[in-house]
Length: 194
Image 1 (cartoon, rainbow, N blue to C red):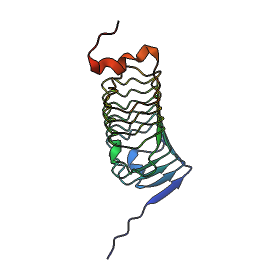
Image 2 (tube, rainbow, N blue to C red; image 1 turned 180 degrees about the horizontal axis):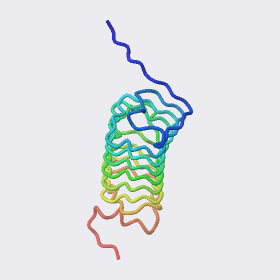
Image 3 (cartoon, one colour; image 1 turned 180 degrees about the vertical axis):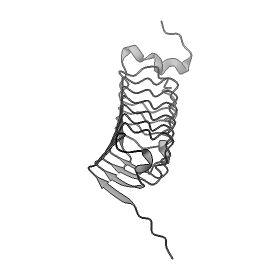
Image 4 (cartoon, rainbow, N blue to C red; image 1 turned 120 degrees about the vertical axis):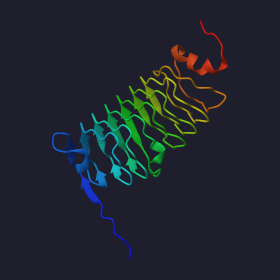
């Protein structure tokens, strides 16, 4: 006999830390919902589905997202430390990050073209073999972020800082850089720029 799994469906609902604790956000399908000020640190979102949802002022550090659907998600002023985004369901995976801390997270081998990272801390983030074509890194700190066999074609790094990208190991056709941050492309060659 097959066991049926019931999933809650919520649409257009606002979840705030004033009214909800993390454990009250039941396993389910959430569409056009807003999550505000909730501490989800370490929470298990495996197999949840989020579509066109916003997370604002939330702590999502170390959350588990195995097979979670994340479609058209906006994260604003959130902590997303240590998340393995490659564990999420890959179908239509899309998100935008504004004023977020994503340190020690991983996007290994994901196809996340056109992703916007605005004013984010991306220290030690793993972008190995990730397709980031047409993505934007506006005002982002990429200290010790890993770019290896990464597709960065037409991506915008003009306002990014502290990155180290080896042009021999990444695809950079039509990527945008400013004169002020070109050193990040040359660091792998061990040359001195004055």
